[in-house]
Image 1 (cartoon, rainbow, N blue to C red):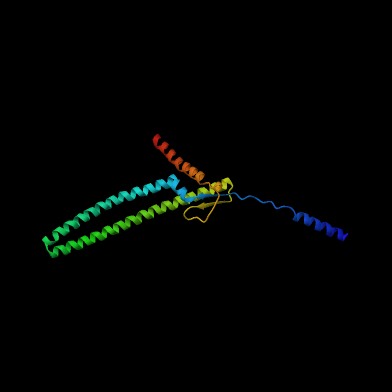
Image 2: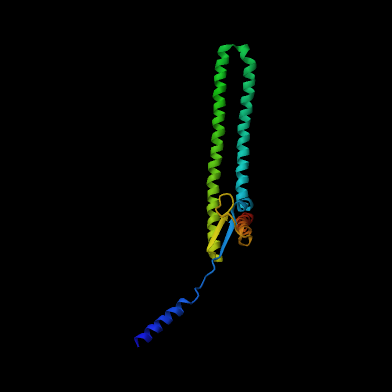
Length: 187
């Protein structure tokens, strides 16, 4: 009887070991992040905004630089006529203005970089949240990023969801603007 029980136990264990394991397919995809940032309307608008601001503030600074160059040219022509003491005093003033203009250029550049950096960080954070929500809704186990700072060296094109993500992000970006325009039109 003991032998029969041992044989039954062994046969049950062998049968259960031969049972094929269920393999669940893992759904994955990837997004080309550099393509996404090139085609995402909000990113384009942000880039255009800071380009326009840089040009506007740059024009103001260029006007100051042009005045400085004119003063420097006048200084050279008047230096001999007005004497060495005048030339030293005006030369020092011009050097001080030149240094101030240089500092102003650096400050402007840093200011624009910081402002655009904050907004770009916010935009990237929003895109990541969107892709995370999208991935959960569509049942993805992983959504990888490719592009400039990517770690994926190869992926089949059939797993590329970049165009779909761009389309949805652009629709999402446009929709609040349309409702704001309608609200303003009613006023």
